[in-house]
Length: 235
Image (cartoon, rainbow, N blue to C red; front, side, top):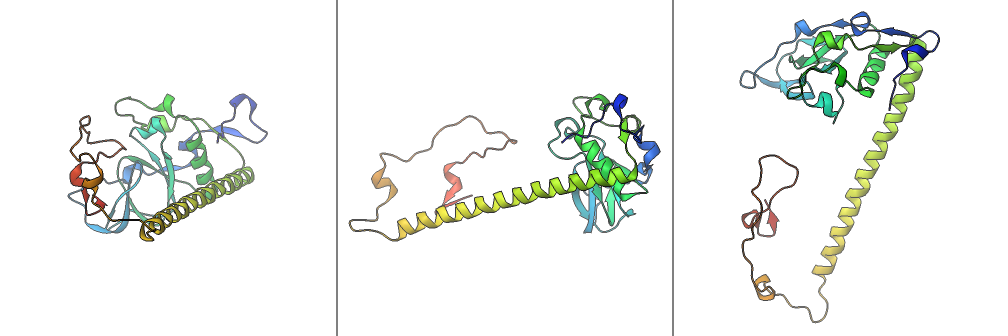
């Protein structure tokens, strides 16, 4: 969903503005904590992609917008690079911290940054980075506050509808899976005439180890071995 507007065709009342004129940057207040130095608690500890841990203290207690400073997602865009946070939080130095006077402006900027490509503003390909200077160089078509409210309301409603559709789809999949498993269970527990119990080895020519390509530490497809199957369960 794009919010981009040609700078030469801005609607009446719109302006091209930059983030350093629209918000206060709080990057200097960020404090990274190494994993071994963190004390466990219930305060969200944020990084470039969202919550990475929970700690026992906070450095912010307000509505803020975080924007990823580094990481492959700046280019891949598998998930949002701008996201709002509220309440007591701790932020490390992998996300820019922005404070807005108007919450509606914060929401408008969040939607806008998530709708555009940041590739022209990101340095480095192996380790992509969006530094503060580059972040502040992104031109933003900026409407008057009433228009911001109208646009944000439309997008809020659209994304709420998407979330509901996803939730309903996941629920339907879960119900289908449960129905399928129930059907299988009914078939194999209510044995018909002539059914007998036997061992797998009696109906197979052989059961032995197979071979496959060498598995990797990363990836989405699991590799199962004989040792993963124990007493009808897969580990």
